Length: 439
Ligand code: ADP
Ligand code: ZN
Image (cartoon, rainbow, N blue to C red; front, side):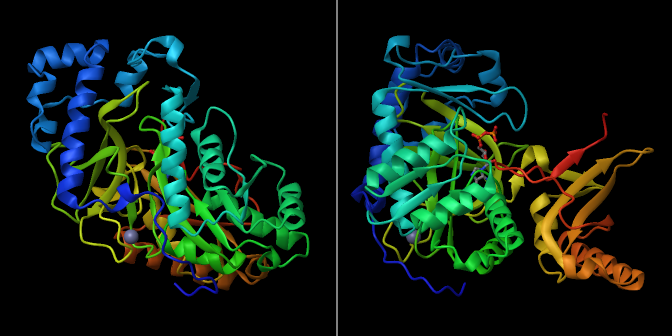
């Protein structure tokens, strides 16, 4: 990826570059300690009794496989805080998942957990170029969602300036970025596109904004989408991943090489499993990520099934970190569509659309079931300059999109071209899939 900004390769914490054998030994020790601490959590107590697991049973990382999985449904069943592993008075903060897929689930933090979380966020921020002299504009929502507060404290830990703008009112966000000279943007990638769009509508070239770096997370984005955002805003984009059940942002993040996100393995053990058989997939194959958060105090979690699909890469990275890297998330198992027997992720549609000139990177995928079969319609916005053109050109554009989707995903879908600005913009996570089958 071409960029006018280069970054120095810096490592925030020596733990990121521990020799692998030391890292593994640390993981075993921490896992054993974790098993001992969660043994009083009713859900784990029961599961451990069933499987006859005791802390002493953890002798190597292979023993992880003797431990039970934890799912979102398990958390819901013990709503609101049935997974607490410390007395209630030790809890200093509560967050919740943003509820993308239903009722929120709560997570809790002790004082030490918050310190750890800040450190983990500092790690990926620094690996993505953050320096103390930077000003960081945080456009993530502040609230139960872990994005805003997580990044906020991470930036403070590094010693940079935080502008805690939160979400909404894009014209005001643009004014603040300009007036305060923010070099760094923290947001969802879809919100960055919206910033560019609103700037243009104001007659401002988005590249004129002072931004040099962006740390994107919270939703899937393809490499092509990243390149588009980098071009439009004149910045360098870094990916970071996390989820509230594991800790929030800070589970993994890009380094200067931007070839996979380093997983903070001194705190989280990762597995990549076939979501059906729950057996490990081969390295480099896509599977469901499963995380064990060993070191959290308030709510450690064992083998949490994220439903996020990605691949792992254990090869050495030029940045010097020794940790395993994860690919971009291609989608959630919940969002995976099975169309006439073919698996389809929204990210594949995104990849195809971004290859087509004349369409804006704004799209929605509608699923309907008018008869016995599911019908998928990809609704995509045209660029303003294309919109006024002739019908025949529209038809050609539709065919072009259909062809690209056929190449990337191997299926035909309906393509609906819509006016510029007609797809709803959200300040947080974009809603790409509209499932109208049960409405
Ligand atoms: P939810 O969206 O499930 O209500 P969270 O706010 O905890 O809860 O969001 C975590 C989820 O967001 C992850 O499981 C993943 O699906 C998505 N996510 C977070 N960061 C990224 C990223 N960098 N790339 C793709 N998806 C991400
Ligand atoms: Zn690296």
